[in-house]
Image 1 (tube, rainbow, N blue to C red):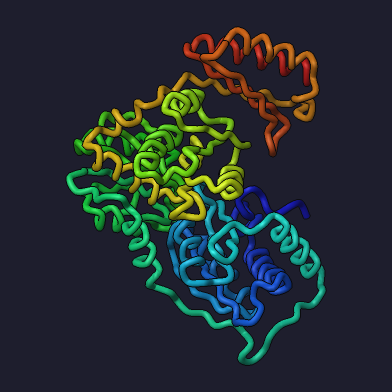
Image 2 (tube, rainbow, N blue to C red):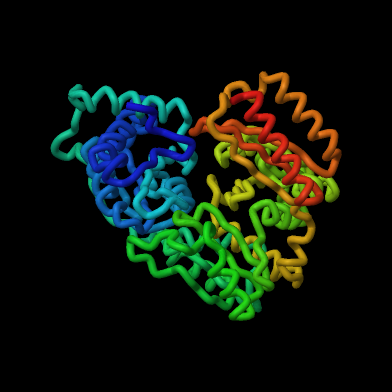
Length: 452
């Protein structure tokens, strides 16, 4: 059995890779591991379980709930809610564990299981490793220590979760959204009820698309991975802006009134300035990944805001923020973490905060986002090479140094070995797209020559 936990829980094709048996077994293992770690000491354990609308989430939810209850954990079943809602409710309800069933932006056949620790925080890597180890041990026949009688877990639906989460979102806004017309694209996903309710309570006039999930249409030609529908709807309805979520609503991308995309880097830039203005940007610092556009870094430097770069992945952004007490971080893909109000990326919260800035300033989103200029960025994948030698090849180091000299301070080069495939990603930014393409092409050739 290969490693189950990736950077964002356990994912795979539902009922093929991710089966009911696996979901049940991992849930029982999680309960036992957390009990061993002392999480449940002195009280009866409780878990919050939620899911996105995928059809497979129905049987996987049943398996997770059965596993937890069989291990003596009481379960609050919150139904279809965003990942950040499950994280929030895990903390707000004082639960010992949270479980979210979702494959985020992936296509409908996939699904996933993500565990949250007490407080709604991601489980520590060592706990995930232990859960996987205990699951592997017991799937080969070692018996579980099972409670009986009154010791088994009880299960109940917690229908108040949606209202509680929406109230939290609206309650942390710095100002209302009255006077704004906003198009929301919910990706037929987990925020299809939550997001329109939150924006409406905050005072916005809404046009909603992609908000009729049927279990099969999640992320299908809509949402943050397919922005064309949102761009057209914003222009058609004369809206001030548009907001797009992914399937589990932990990310947010936007569209300005002209239909132009506003990506995660631009959203971070707008929010950083807004938070600094109200003295909420601790240490005047924003955290993002090495894949952030150079234009974002240059804009933050110009505005006197410190930029801290991490490895690619929102988990690394969050680790850096928690370690140093920073308040804002995120990725170009739209994962934005506002740590004072959420323990994970929260697309609805991000969209609300972005709209609140538009309403508060009276400026268009296009104007606000112009604080940074997105430099042309070219990404080339070079397959079938020895990615382990990216940092040790002298030939490649020479090629990179030459490229960096050519680009100067208005461009940059990044070579990244893929985490899952035998390939190297070549990323080049430059003030001119043709220069970026030319440099990327030469570097791709150098990667093939040096590592092929």
